[in-house]
Length: 292
Image (cartoon, rainbow, N blue to C red; front, side, top):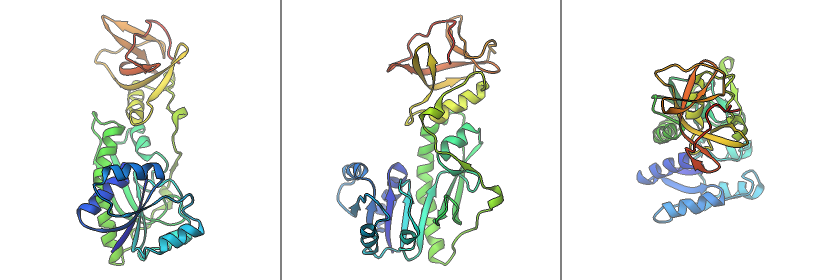
């Protein structure tokens, strides 16, 4: 069996490591040039051909990919959308790693959205790629419990450990003629790709538990949830609800008996633990001001 892995980050790298460790024949790794440089630093010796096309759907790329005579393409966070003439190249098809349960979490930023929405379990899917957006048949799906101590960083780590197992399961099915389970279109929901503008907190609209989930979903490696503190941007990386309930005007910062800063949300206050203003971690915030 010959494999081509399309990747741009840790998700694909974990799959690549698993394939190398199990002596699978990865004939080519497709990624952008900046990530290929990082890969070559991590890999002790060159075991695959590396390819960084400007357009994966160009005639030149089609010719190049066909030359490897691959059985399966594995898409793991690759940023370019593959068109049908690329999808049709490998013998058994292309499989795509999606960090959300399908069809409920189609689209972008599924791990972030699952945390924001307060899901009790994180769902993952590996599908047979078609021309739609996350619409292909499901070859493997798994879930893991999200703990109160989890944040987006730990959830990424847990997901990346599961994906290689799911990929192997998907390949076994494909080679036995099992092309997966068709998705129920009646349950389909699309979520948009998040960017930093979406990370702004409105304390007048969010309850304390919602702010906590929001912060947990947008911490490192992302820029963090944020709000305006006077004329500066305050980025929040962790916060927690307190046993004592603090009430008042949403957005107001208070300090009680040395505890603080506490920000009043829609229903009650929340304690800011790790935050940054102008690159300085945990600076003093004025008592009584409003975060907007």
